[in-house]
Image (cartoon, rainbow, N blue to C red; front, side, top):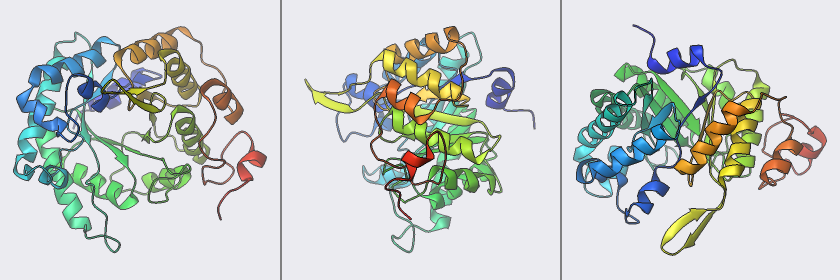
Length: 338
């Protein structure tokens, strides 16, 4: 099999820029709270083209499809569990159209979010059922022309492993990020170092792995330092939120400025991240500032925790739950669990 589009780009670039928010951009286009964004792939395709085009025109090398909640479990909440293949295929096909018209190589990454269910024994989701759900979604994305699968915002190692298996069944290369939003751990208690070790033990490991969403840009970069400390040579991904959400005038607004996200992007690159993007609240103006900073500012030394907090604001918790992962072990050790 020939090398996939993402691996080719990674082999010729020190860093790649991913996209920004999906939900924030669509809410600002009029998506109602509670309405599945995936329905817009069929009902409002021009808005989805606009979303994708906004990323490409802002300098993104990779953008994610509007299919985050496109699995049977999430769509079932809206009586649409029978539309998985259709909604994913069209979401990817619209992306393929925009990428192919860009005049350069742009990777279409098929977004695969969590099922929203809890695994056995705490919940009812079985490994086989999770694999089946992810596989169904992956086949739709593949049919639509996605270059890679992009598994994101995962909190459970079981779910990450099920997605890896589904990617193999679909014969698709993949990337996978988890969300470390609970005192530096995922909601299910996983630390950054534990994730890095898990990834290397998978039968079908991702092209690249990392973190997305979470709390804010500073916390996300602390997580990245935790990955880097494990010493994996696999490319790292960082997709941090543009600050903290505020609600006003009927819109959700994140308080992170383009200047702040430019600082975050440069620090991410200096920390060894190869694929840099934003998550919630990251708009085209943020992406443009990030791209400009990455292209104009020389690479610096790997940042310490002090450098990160000085540039981006403090951390939301005293520890990230890992061992001595970076910069200042004394400060990290205070208040650590276990």
